[in-house]
Length: 505
Image 1 (tube, one colour):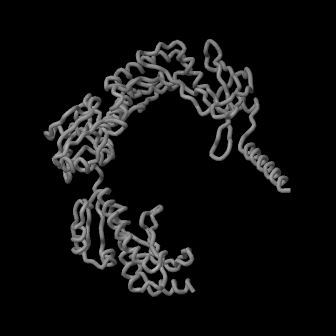
Image 2: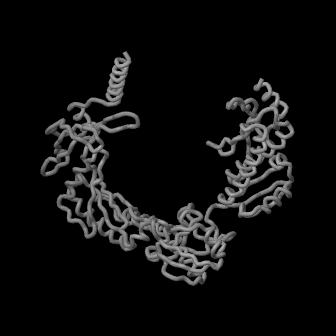
Image 3: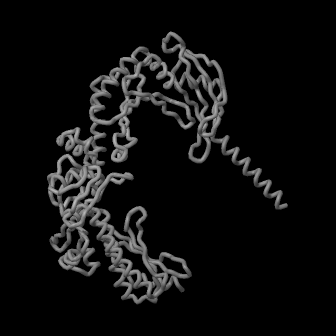
């Protein structure tokens, strides 16, 4: 009987899988193909020459192919194209729809008599089934002058593909693809390409504007990688313009300075600086360097010898490390933030503004830029990374508070609601054997510090709010019994303990 049940289950699963497959696919016949050609492709005069023919796709599915001819485009001979019933995997099941390769066939026709400009090659991007769907042009990008040469190549191609009036709006993609000059340093940008679309009707002014924008994109990539040989083909003013065109980019500054210390040079990503850029900075600052920008050594202000060398895609160093070994006091490029520790949070911490500010100022490890006290409240300015250091110090204190609860019961602790809104809530698990005064002392501080972490994560002045939840811990299970929101309300410890006591009876 057991064997029969297994066989029946297998048959049922097989049937269900077949139902799942067929329920998400559609049947297409020749009439559907004709309708697709008329309504979707907008071709009125055509003949279906053959099909359907099974064709195996690279994605593992077997598709159907119809071969079609049309004289709609006024060519000397009919244009041949294909329509496919294309099967593919869609999320949880197999789906299918009708597709075609008309664009690809138009491009092949236009390129039949084209002599490619020097340096230009073609590439045929393929769909998931492995069928080419277009033809694109590829041009190696090794230096700035290649953008000018690309403009000339695109103009030649426009002239060459203007032979068929019906296809004049057919757009090709022209890809300027990084050509590797030095396999070590160029590894930072290897494989990147900068693309524009054009047809024979595209005005030269639009192509020129697009190539200028692509040149800026390329330059910014070189700046972020510190590739001095490529960067130096542009003037300092041009580099500065490209950097400042995007609010996310910043020219390298010193701490507390509004003007760039090194115009035309930028961070890789906020607080990292590329090796090549560091070489140029050290050069300007008078450090004695051995080697070139690709691999160099120097003695830092710390008296130690330091070496930086491009390789294994390592090409950046943090501003913190640079400042430590050079004393240059560079800024980290991230936005400066300001937060407010208001009277409500200070009251929960049982501290006044002056003593709280003094305690923060005594901390080690650069946890903020500066602190000021105004009208009994504390304003803290700093960078996100500095606030993150301060947050880690706070969480260390929170762990100490947790341990003080665990002294009563190994399961007594608290956790934070930091899934979607970081530190929006704190959940305390304990039992009535923890003295109420001890609980008040620990939880007030823990709640205040959690709210402080919430404020640090926000990085701005705003009206904070924290949900404080009490839960029991019995037989390895946690159940919520009491909750309130601070600072709108005060924690009613008497009510919380009554709820804990009731839940455990």
